[in-house]
Length: 143
Image (cartoon, rainbow, N blue to C red; front, side, top):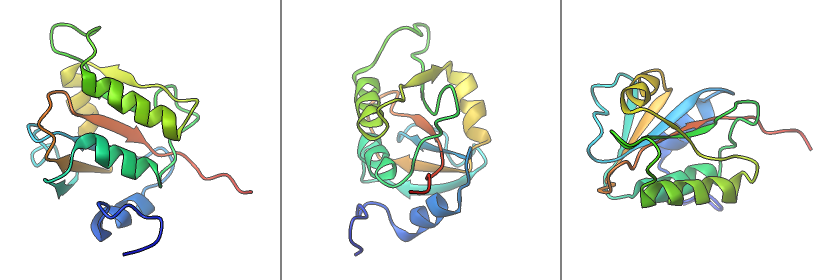
């Protein structure tokens, strides 16, 4: 155990978060997402929700303030303007950690393609549909 580091972030995921550079992306995905076949390294957190993992990651990792969208969810198939409750939860988490950031969205297959270029994927045990988010890493500004 370490001080101030959420215990759901194990050593493998902490290494990935530290190794990522500015502009690199990490995908936090639900239990239904085809993570293993998407390409990037996969870290499994089967017993955790996507929202808890997102909250834990954002407690350590800044979002990219230069990007138009640095937190992106998957749109509902056939109804891109529909907001699932988990999307509102993701947005509340993002805003709590990065007050000037909002949640963007991508069509399902565009989201899949974006995940294929991510630095890593965290597959959670999230059972809620559309429990997927991509986070783009930002920088830590010197004091």
